[in-house]
Length: 248
Image (tube, one colour):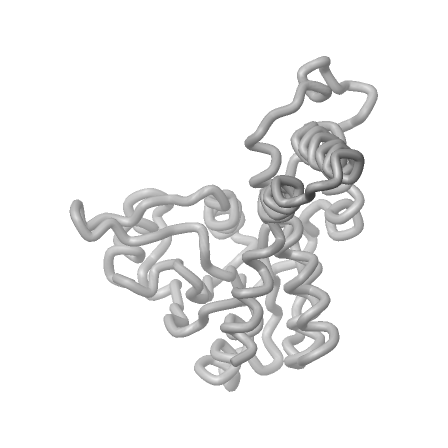
């Protein structure tokens, strides 16, 4: 039930949703002055949420507290990587990388350098469709031994990533050195899930682009409709974090 409710609420995280709602409301307002006010609000919201520099400043405030260099003095028995960075192409029967592919790329780099011994990949759109194809890709691309990859294939969200992984691999993780590697955008919710489930680990954030404001170009002040999609991702993360904090 929580999963369904969270997905429904998350669908309203997009600024486009509320801008369209206000636009429709404006169409039905008979009072010209009130219609003008609502129209002005729609314009300002569209301008605000489509400007890259505004989004980057807010995103940076969210992710900067969880960003730190990888501790090269550590050696980890397991790297736990929540899914969502790959999917299975049923036409060509191959694994396709998604936007957060840096999670697995960086994890593979650390594995090759000897900082990590084994990988645990949890589902949420990751290699749950064909784990054999995923392991084959990891072997061909990064030379990761198939026996060094453990897969949890039932999770649908971040909390389930941890609860199902604990159910499946909990005993072998006891007293082991584990690092959770996830995109910086999702790391706060990831850390909260660890706290809620008692999953003991270190954390390493990847897949981020912290902009130095003094280095911004003029294009950061030009409205870009694609930025609204990024706001939806960030809003979804805020809603998920609050939901996990209050109800789990």
